[in-house]
Amino acid sequence: HNQLVEQVLRLVHYLVRFGYYANIEDIQVLLRPLLSVLDGRNDKPFEGAKERSPGAQKQYEEQGRFVHNPQNTAVVNAKHMAMEVLEVLFNFRFNIRLERFIYQFKAVQEGRSDVVYHLPSQSGPLALSKRATRRGRDATGMTEFGQLMSSNCDVLADEHLMEFANRQLEGILRESAYFEDKNLVAILKDLSDYQYDKMVVKSMGLLTRYFSAHSTLFDRAVQAQVLIQPKSV
Image (cartoon, rainbow, N blue to C red; front, side, top):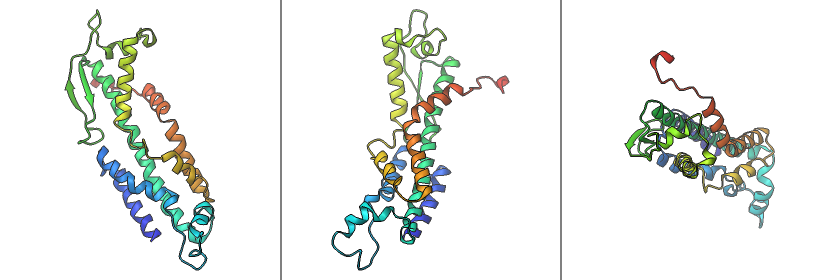
């Protein structure tokens, strides 16, 4: 059974990797069974006289499932494959957020700073649509986006501009917050207790990515180069 689960998850890994799950609703549906596989509290001891004894389930949850043995290996392999899928979803979320940052920057550079770009849940990860809305302009006619991207901008000195920047950041991050309220941190910490090196390495790597997601995004956005003219190639 666990070997079958591993192979199914391998198939899911390729489907996610090649864009079959292309919107937020699909990802939310996928996350429920995926996290259920990863959550060790859902594991059951193997059939046998000892496992059917009173208290066997509790002993298995607290100690038995972490032990390196042939019975647990199939379960561990399935969980490791599930973490591979989770890592692809982390990449998917990062790409969406970076695309949103760059697209807004490019819109301002092209003089379309009164246009708000958003990622509709009905479309794919990079399919952006636009909704034209009037933004407040300063005395020079520059929009908030234009002010934020000016080399003379001091966000800390302008409360209105700071609020605008915070709203935009919250919007970008919220629309791809797949893992909020999913108890993901506790699940990954639990997976790091398994006596298998690959489980420890993968779970700690995902925890690091989870907590450093915002700083990594900002670092990459600063380093990105946007080609705004054909001659820039």
